Image: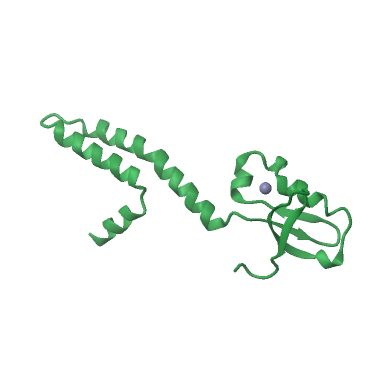
Length: 134
Ligand SMILES: [Zn+2]
C-alpha cells in the first residue's frame, strides 16, 4: 500500500482529481456503469496534465542554462533542452550575443562558460563553468 501512496505523490493533483471524478462517476452510474468509457475519459483528462508535469520535471533535471565552449578554431553553444525543442533554436538570443564577442579567438576565453543573460549592450553575461557541474 505504501508503494501506491508514493506513486500517487509523483502524479499531479489534477490527474488524481480526474481519476477520483471517474471513480465517483462509476459509483453514481450503478447498476449499469460504463467502466471502459469512464476509464477512457479519466485517462484523456489526466494525460495532458501528466505530460506537462513530466516535461517540467525533465527540464528541471536537465537544467535551464545555456553554455558556450570556446576552442582555438570555433565556439559552440550548448542550448537548453527547452530551447532545442522550441523549434526556434536558430533564433536563440544567446547565440547572437556570443557571436558579437567571438569574432577572434582569445586564449583567455578558452573553455566552457555559462551564459547568465544578455546585457543592455547586447553582449553575453558569462561565468566560467569549466569542470564538473556544481
Ligand atoms: Zn538557445
